[in-house]
Image (spheres, helix red, strand yellow):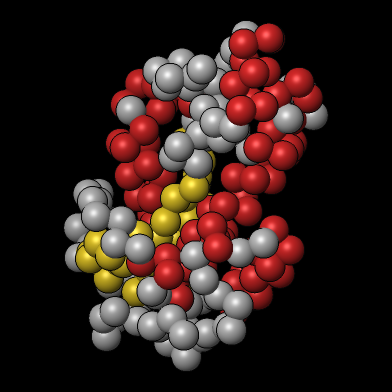
Length: 190
């Protein structure tokens, strides 16, 4: 069972998806959950099936006090690097919340808050705290939906299946077809 709150304040969890991809944006979510919220299936999005992630997405959206999702484009990733783009996406998601948190818990070991709200970085936080797990699910499902839509214009890369991650199939498609404007040129693509 995941822990519900790290602090005694209105707290949001934040996480990102797509950091290791070869194509597409990096996506982050920020989620504020009620203190008593938990769900038996709730966990790190990487440990859940697509079906469970999509089920939990609706449950999270229906029960959250507030949530927000932010994409940072390939153009910005190329300009400021993937770490800074991930931090930017998380800060943008937090800033989009209508309910302002008094504390932030972040999945990972590094964060820079742009809004002067105190925070705590928690390694593997998406498998420890409900709001970070919820953020990981919303970020992952939003990014996956984005890549599925993008795949319709670029079917040869099969982004509907690989979501832009560096699979063997994706790398072979790059070798065969070249790169698109959605590929991260600063990454080792093949």
